[in-house]
View 1 (cartoon, rainbow, N blue to C red):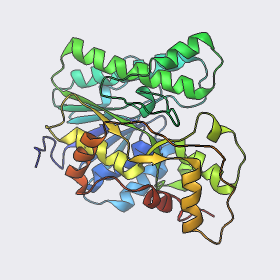
View 2: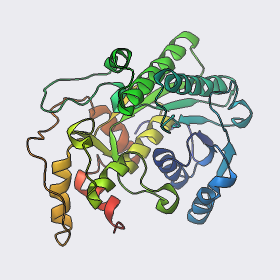
View 3: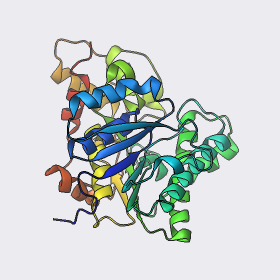
View 4: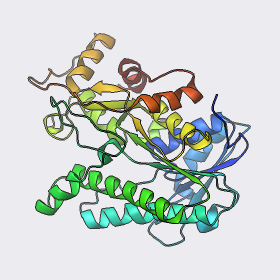
Length: 338
């Protein structure tokens, strides 16, 4: 087994604590006996998150701290004392259409996190939540490969030519530029802690506190399909691609954080390909009594080759098994949907 360098009982810092991925990362850390200090913009408004985890875990604790604006220099410096690990999940997602502003927020936030760790002698390891789209756009029905050196430079090229492109291109650009900035800073500063990045594709699975979190991120896409909302996303920017379960995504972050064997790596959180049609076919079998919209003719499939074997290996160290299946993840996600 690989060496665990951050032991249970240590304090780990997680940004974006009330988000989909952030809350799942916290859940898995607490389950394994780590104490967590998590950031939200307003602690009072996130009281529900503390209440949820306080009721669920008794031996490990979540402490919430307010970081209203991750663009502010030194925003993390006063709240990272004694931490041994830092997971930077937070990302600007709230309808920012100005690409330069979005990139500035993402890059500055990531660099502020790294600089805070550099000022904290106890910090051993840092994990940055990137995205599959920082490596490439999905290309349905096209056979191509990506590897550890792949970055989505196309996103910025498109935005420079067409500044009004939809938010997916802005998100792709900010994730690409932020991850590049993380690696550039690490190379130039040679910090005393290890840096890894996780690149998950679409997340499907349980939402921990749906009454407060709603249908966040990619789960919102699937809920629209579940209730029959008509949208063109399935034939445009949300066509066939890959997925990862919310729990596997969180566990991949945890494993990259605590194990010394993961050092300066990009881990591709790609479990298996999926599409709208595949999802609807699965749901028809799982919920035969429910009426779903028809499949989309000529949708095709994702034929990309992804270096996801290493990520699955790292996942097995903390899970004891490989990727969750699409069927399992869709079932867990929809069990309490009406």
